[in-house]
Length: 165
Image (cartoon, rainbow, N blue to C red; front, side, top):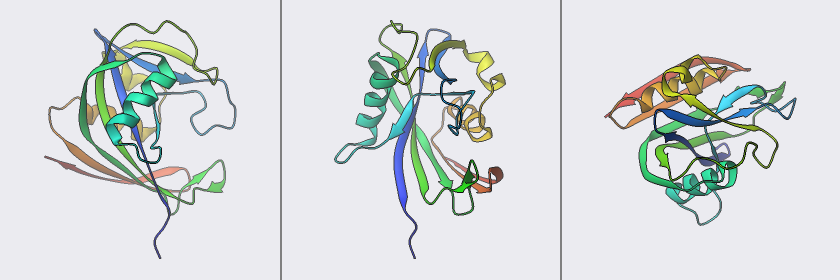
């Protein structure tokens, strides 16, 4: 039996030596609460991965992108994964991109009330993030395309398989 599969994107957005990220600090109970994340989200019907990455950056950060580059695919095998004690119920395939911001963000908050922050690239691995996000960040810093699969049991990351081309 096939499990439900959802698709989306994540885009690490640079502005000079900084990365523009979102500090998800506004919604307790959110799986990303108090974590730093790159802008991203789910694919809309009829949308390509590139279109999704551009739209998500515009919606969440309020800026356009240039030099959008596909870096790889992250696959979240969620058959045994839980979010806040509830079974995930779907797998997630996420196209990973990097891009440069066309301009600095003019707003300080996302539409959901989360902080938009600029972090020096060297500090990104040290921020409070999910383990998988730290791993993906490091993969984007190589000049190679990758695929990575994350497998969970409960809320714990149990296995990572990486292919680098």
